[in-house]
Image (cartoon, rainbow, N blue to C red):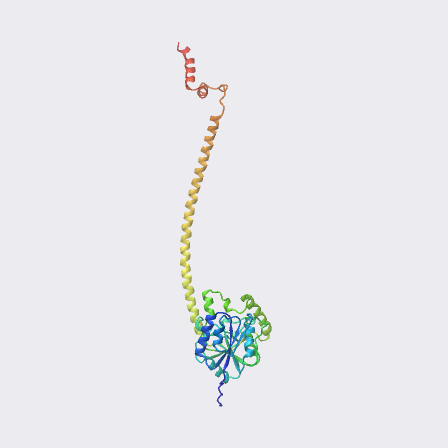
Length: 373
């Protein structure tokens, strides 16, 4: 068997710049540690440290007057790139494996039917154009072990645009899909439609953008479109589905026993976490029930006190009404003589009220004197 001659040229790497200057410096510094035989093509959509970029001696540095979006910027870089291979790298992806690019190029040299290699991908695209996330393939620490590939290279259907290495065959990003989304998946379908295979390389990575999401920080600096992300994603998926409906759904490669082993282990751990969470929630519910019980008892006590106070208030009101009646009676003018037919006691009472004690006593004694004789 003839030995395949090794490609010895430099691979152009297109990097889209859009703010996040500190992250970009870290990414490019790490890239230099693990990569040889490459040259940089910068497409600048908005970067505040031009001196740093020029200090890297890039093969090309295109400065756009405004943020043109990632799809337009990728095409600008691809137009400039020369040679049989070209790579596209996001400015927030750290690559830790030394010689990663050289190994991918060697693989593509041995396999002329391979048109595109990514570092993150999915085996399957669903009929509606969405990605089957259960078929994710990547070597990222934030994802469970089930998604880490078993082999050095794994065939996939959808490459993720965070890092792409392509045969420079003139394919271009479809800018009509979106300024941000689905350009990478569409590029994968272009290669597959042309008869090439798409693979994912098992390379250790760290995606800085995931850290922003975990911290709940604004990811606006990581975007290259001014539009609302979810809306744009849904629209891009719809356009992608309409364009490639004749090939969807599509799956390439397969998940081996390691995936299922790790998936089962993860599900067991997840079930245990759920059970623990359920137990904690149960304890919290019991404590809540006890608290509600105490509140209910307190409410009943307060209600009883309020009822008692209401009865006391009603009684006080009755007393006030009685006093008011007596006061009204006391304030009313007295008649000149007792009512007709009044008894002796009633007449004495009338005299006490109208004439006083002395006059009444004198009148009674006066009436009694003749009888005494």
